Length: 266
Figure 1 (cartoon, one colour):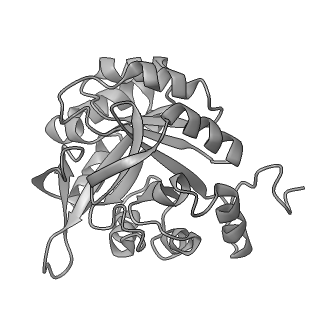
Figure 2: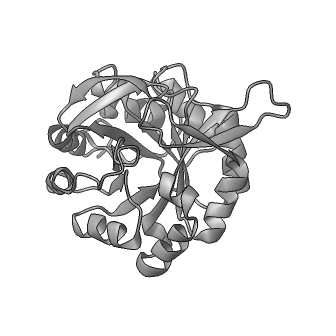
């Protein structure tokens, strides 16, 4: 059975890691290079780095910060924010990223997914999908948002499930499903959204938005059928460690890669 991945997320604004609630009211959470090195040592399976205002500010991602972050980690690094062209993707991979995450540019130019996948391989192209539940929709529906680094983002009218399926058809090799409604609330992931996406696509799905306890991660993996879980607040502010979280999941029967210094790791 494939191991499930635990992924800390570094939302970077003005060169610093921040964390908000529902993509608003961000507060400082640390230095990206220092945090990346710390999580690498803690046993994280991957790290996700988002320059959250690159798209809304219409500027390139901070290449120097990415390079310094990549130099400190020896696990896969996914980078997103402000990537508009295949050349942007190439530069990020050359800077040390293993995968790139696209959201705004992919919605505006879906062929960017195909072009990136054809040149670098689908395994390098991640769809970072920010979705908000449509109020009072029955059955439930979720709308895709872009420019989400700018005070909550902008609605697109796109149905999230339809967009997830289309992105996979275009060549995306993984989807990070981020619930705007749950982001930063620490009340649990949107399991219904996760499960619906997971059942509709054939690529790995990463849960994002809402983690407050290791139990939330467990629920995302089991009930949400996610292949991996991404979290920020619970790790950045020392509520739970990656080690403790992995041990909790292992005790509940979830296959995880235990750090060599963890108990029961041999």
